[in-house]
Each structure stands twice: as C-alpha cells, then as structure tokens.
Image 1 (cartoon, rainbow, N blue to C red):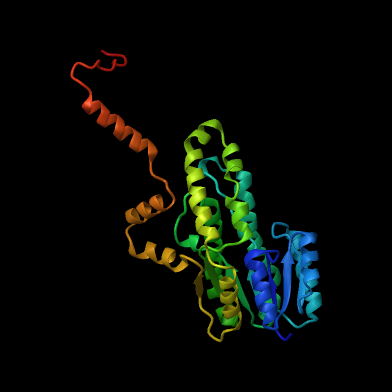
Image 2: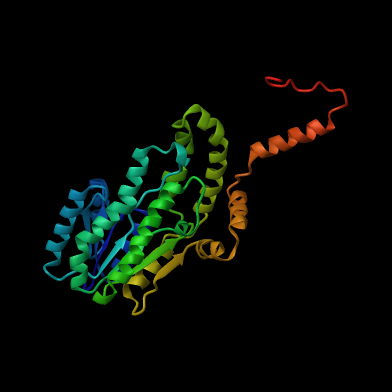
Length: 312
C-alpha cells in the first residue's frame, strides 16, 4: 500500500468501480460516501486497503472534517491522488427551474468539488500527486433539458483546465474524464421518474413541455441504460493515476468520442438538427400550423372569411 488516493462518490456506479479498480491495483483508497449506511456497506465488503470516509460534498464543515481524518490516517505521508466523482444530475426546463435546484446542483457539482480540491491540495502537493476530475461529454455540447447538469459540469471543467496549467510547475498533474453513456444507478435517479418533474411544473408548462420531456426521457434513458459499464471510466482513472504520461482528457464510454468531435466539425445548424432528431424534439406546433395552412389552401371557394379584429 505505497500509493494513496481519495475517491469521492464511492457508494455506487462510477465511484464504486473506481474504488474496486484502485484497491485491486494495491492502492490505499479513502472512499468517501455521504450516508452512514453506505459507509457500512463498504466496511462489510472488507476490501483490503479501503477506508470508508463520511463526506457530504455540499457541506463545507463535512469536507474539512473528512480532510482532517484523512490526513491523520496518512501519518504524514501525503496523498498521491484525488478522484472527484461525486455529483448529481437534473432534468429541468430552464425557465421553470427553481433557484433552489440551480444552487443545489452547483453546490455539489462545482463549489463542493473545488472545496475538496482546496482541502486536500497541500497533501497532494506534498507527494506531487494527481487530480482526476470526472465531468461529462456534455461539456462539449448542449443537451435539451440538461442545462443545469451541463453548465455546472462545464464550470467544473474550466476549473480542471485552469488547475492543470497552474499546478504544472509544482509537478501535480490534473486530468479530466468525460464519460459518455454509462449505465449506472444514477440513470434511474435522474431519468427514471420524469413524471415527478412534470407534475412539479405549472399547468402551462406541463402542457408545453410534458409530452416533449416524456419523449426525451424515454430516448435518453434507453441510451444511458444501454451505455458502457462504469468499469471503462475506472480504467481511465487508473491510467490517469498511474501512467508516466497521463492524458489531458479521457473520453470514454458509448458515444463519448463521437459527441465530443461532432460539434467541432459540423455547423451548429446541423448539430441542432441531429440533437432534435436524436431526442425526439420535433416541433409539433410547427407541424400543426403547416397542416392548418394546407387545409386552408384546399378549402372550397366561398368559405367564410375570418372576422377582422377591430376593422377600421
């Protein structure tokens, strides 16, 4: 156990796969989870070298306390790696997203991640370690109803790139992993019950967005559930932590490289058309209007003319 790493969001999905991958490689892993029940599950697994740590990404005092516990367990050795996995997703029409939701997702996906980096940077610098930040392929392109997730992760991606440059003289390497479609329990949390999201909207928004969100949800859910195993992300994390020449950016998982490349080579109008078709966002109002116009052109001569409003 010569190498040490902190992995956040270790209760399931990508985080748990990263814990398994790094402990099997002989690293001591500080696996952070938010709930005591998840800590108990990790303890019951009895993986060699895995130390469960309670940490709530949205609570600054929890971050400070967890960092102190980790430093105590290291006995002055310093830290070789930090993998920021913890995060949440939300599906919302932006004009109806509550500021509470906006603040929550940025608190977890952006402010909390930066706070963890700040809390552990001294230990990482001591060993000239590495930071691996999990963002999303969505930082490369907008996804309908995914504005909160993509904007918070895009802000975090900029932090990643800034740190990579600023930390270079100190020998601390910073890498980003941009997963594509990955099948994890998080998919069910974000896309599994969109009726609750629709029900929370005011009546006019339910009428406007309900059918579209349902269709979007069905297609996005199918894409994610048929995505790659979280192990492909864990493999990228392992490479970033152990390779002599880690990559600046890892795009892994189903569709990741394609979705990151297309916006760079295709006109924006073409990208819009692809995404509209991909997520079933055909403008139904436009189709209805076109049908009405065609019907009017076929109307027999002598049909009553529409009344004029305020004719003068």
